[in-house]
Image (cartoon, rainbow, N blue to C red; front, side, top):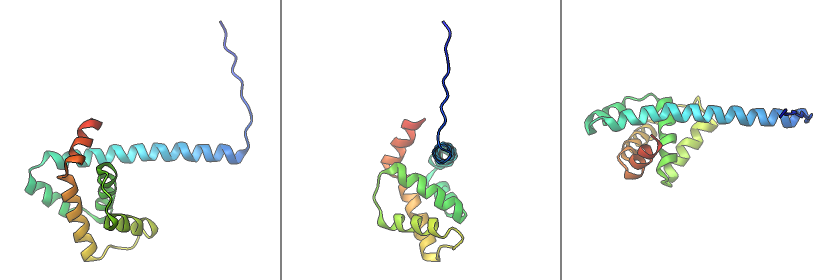
Length: 124
């Protein structure tokens, strides 16, 4: 049995949009894979080592990891949302010392949350 492939022309705007969606999906999958490795490494550490590792993260690593953990945790923290929104709106702006300290503390607490641990076990 032979198969005949039919192609159809689509407007350039639709093709561009579809391509953008495909690229966004690929980027999201890559981001998630990278963050899973980081979070699994944190979860494999003892409490003190994990806390020290979290507190030594650079701002970009901190925000990326916080975003990932926040999404998989299912929590609804207005503070985390505000920090992530602010950093997305202006990625070059450094967090204040208070924001950075709070973000690191929240990340460490979320890493110890049972919902994050179970979500990471399910995804492996």
